[in-house]
Image 1 (cartoon, rainbow, N blue to C red):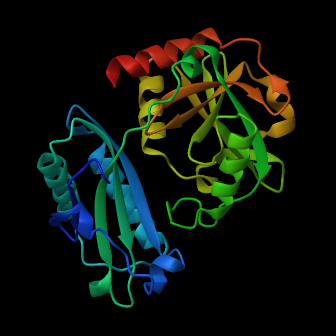
Image 2 (cartoon, one colour; image 1 turned 90 degrees about the vertical axis):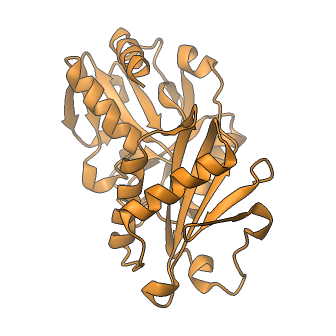
Length: 269
């Protein structure tokens, strides 16, 4: 947080130098917490309401009780953006449980924004696959070790991300992204019960449906990628990134309908 002088703790704005979590906090150490990352562009926190609603839902899923209201979290985030005079950043919202609901902590901080290589949008991304299923997939929790190790392996191989594959051989999601396959104007996504329902994913679906695309919930088998025209990833920081390579499988080009969807989404967001 060196570039941003303030952070928020339980709705109170404090100096970034005071941003500490005690080592004795066993709830944090054991990953009993949920979080969100919000993209701030031109001082506007995009989809802030959606992110905060998901934060609350994640807390409910893992039975993390707290005293913070949805309106309070939104206001605290907006106050921090204003206080730091932020134009562009990634806003990290972290809710850590306590022994009682009154002892839960809400931290909000501004982090340097992530700018992916522009070539990814025109040339597509390489991804690898790893067998792993997240615990309580619809909750965005601090329990990220499996995803972290898969992402670290992807980086070591020069890949953008790792796709997570369940024990039945189906692709569910990326380590920090949602995954879609595309065929013509049909978009295919893993069953919603098996994935984190990404905020950007939801808005991509809305834009797709408004432009004549059909959304189909289907288990996508890793060994059947050749049945699709292509695939792509969605995330808060990157919008839509096309995939051209999955392990050793290659799509020769980005399909035209995916390019159209990327264009329509960028025009709106």
